Structure formats: structure tokens, C-alpha cells
Amino acid sequence: MSVPLYVPAGEGEYVDIRDTKRTYLKLTTPDSNGEFGFFEHHMAPEAKGAAPHIHKQSTEMFYVVKGEIEFTIGDRKVVGEPGAFAYVPRGEPHGFTNRGTEDATLLIMFYPIYDREDYFRGLGRLTANGRNPSMEELREHMAKYDQFMV
Image (cartoon, rainbow, N blue to C red; front, side):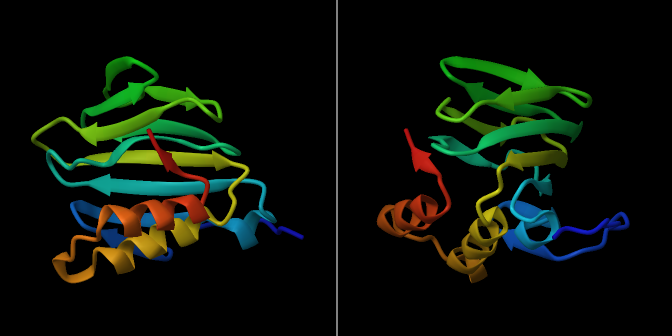
């Protein structure tokens, strides 16, 4: 059973992933009884973010807090500035990058979550100390958490 949760700004478990400055795991599978996930994703200038992919079972939503995020949604590219929101139903190809020369902050939400926090933790391990995982390693890791490259 989930219980109310409050996580102050700048607090909570976090993961550092390659050119992403930091991803805070604000609401995880155990916190929400597997219903919903919420992540605060800080990106370095011109960070690549996520290459186009799909989720077969999850819906993903994004809210731009800071910076310029270029979203690929289906066959469209759009630039989201602070206040922009993107809703991506399951099965729809999408990806994002920090298009700007400044830091960016993006809120990422998943419904249902399917242990998404472990996806971020695993990426942190795979890219620790500047390591570049192979495409095979990445695809295998992504598939465990309902993410498939397109």
C-alpha cells in the first residue's frame, strides 16, 4: 500500500548518467505501489538525452522546467521551453535532447512505472567512470524496463 510522500527540493535518491548531470528518483515503484513514477532529470548543455524509442506498456509524460528540450515524437521534432508539456502514449516513438547551451531540467512521469527507477540506476552503473556500454548491453538493459529503440 502506498502512503503519502514528500521529497524536498534537491533531495532524494539520485543517479548520475553520462552527460546527464543528475536524475532524482522522486516517486518510485515501492512509493506508488507500481502505479506511477516521477523523475527530475537534469541535463548538461547539449546532452543527448534519450534516442528515439518506444514503451510497449507505459505512457510517458514530460514537463520542461528549465532550458530548451528538443523532443522527437513520432516523426515530428519540437522544441519545448519552460512550461512545455509532452504526453506520449505507449507504442509512440519518442526521444529528447538538451538542444540548448545551458543546463536543462525535465520532469519525467511514467504510468504505470514498471520499476523504471531500476532502469535509471542500471544506466548509471553502465556509464560509470566514463564507460561507454555496447549497443547490445544497452538494448538488453532497456528491454528489461519496457524500452525499445526504433
